[in-house]
Image (cartoon, rainbow, N blue to C red; front, top):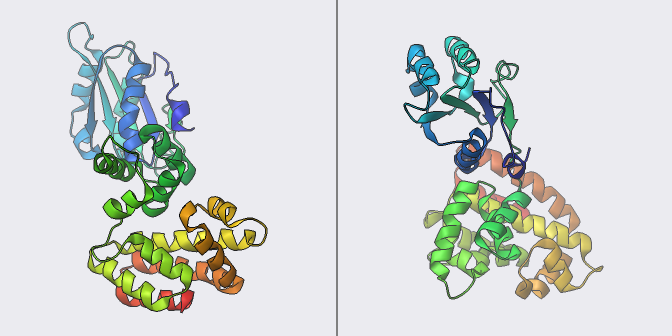
Length: 316
């Protein structure tokens, strides 16, 4: 289910142990308020790594569950990496799940279904859908009041991880202050900036097919400490924009092309020219090269050398 749907979740009063499948750390943290509301009353939440949780004696857990909240505050444990629970601990959880009016609730969190198949028949499960780019964009718009262009630009550059997006969004709001809204150029200056070059310059070089400038700008970004996968993500974003724009070139105005591809409106004419110049064959083969680059960087390829070759294949 979507996290917004989970916010309406109402667990049954006689259920004490739950599975929570969620691959986003921020949503796991924010789930506490939903669980607290669903459990009713005042619950003290504590988070445990699975190893820490396993070290708590079974008798102690049962004692907490059986102690009426009249005498102590009810407690709720969130246990990470539920797939690593031992068989004996799972048996203890089964006993706790049967306690009537338990003063202990336990949420077993996992990043995915892998490894928890044996737990699914034992405890009620809540599975949160993975955050997609559209979800992350909407989240930024709703929470930080960013414009759709800024939200899309930030997600394209950083990905869908809400924790990272939260950190950058708060930095951007502080940078912009309360006097104006956050703009795309703020993202370039604060989040994606290089000491020598604006992040826009890499986009411009790729759109223009300027291999020498692209290599120069990219080299400066790497020297400034930019992560190779982050830089690759920027190239993928531009390539995807070109692909979308190429499909619509000749059918829509430059402004409409820019809107459809998620390009800032002030670059509309430049983008339309680039779409006409880039050939379908190279655009299609470029996606294969970008996929290979992603695999290479995840296996510790030399970014300086690999990027030079990659850019040559794309625009050289």
